[in-house]
Each structure stands twice: as C-alpha cells, then as structure tokens.
Length: 111
Image (tube, rainbow, N blue to C red; front, side, top):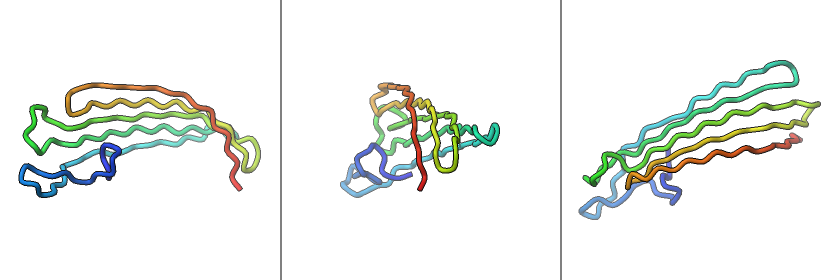
C-alpha cells in the first residue's frame, strides 16, 4: 500500500519534524467465475486502514473499503462487453464518512 490520501505521501513529519511511516494494513480479495464460454464475472472487496501515530483525538487517520462486481460478455475473440457496479466508502481523520456507488458499461477490444 503506497501513497495514501491521493497526495503521493508514503510518510508524514512527526512532532519533531522527522519523517515517520504510518502503520498501514489492508488488502484485496477477488473471485472470478466463468458461467459459460461467453459469460464471466469478477467480484472484488478491499479494505485499508491507516493508523494514527500522532496522538490525535481519533484512533485512526483513515479507513476505506471498496467492492465491485461485473458481468462480462465475451462476444467473439478479442471483443467483450461488460456491466460493472462499484461501491466505496471512507472515513477521514475527522470522523467524516462518505460513500459512493457507480455503474459503468465497458467496451473492450484486445489487440
């Protein structure tokens, strides 16, 4: 897990101005299933938590989770269509919670 917060950070300054890597844990798990020769699905779940090392009032700096599922239609050879649904949520260092869900259509040609 690298670059938390979307800002390119891998460490932050401690109270003395020295860089300190924050304890981070998380991971992803996925499962792919072929329903038949023309249909397949992939399901993924991920979780991440960055622990608070700066004695701030909250007991963690950030948590987030991610889940997705799709159905791929393998039409012929390298041509594929898919429908995918993605859900994510996060809690920031101030305890604010946010979540979002989206659906997307995928057109894929592998050459």
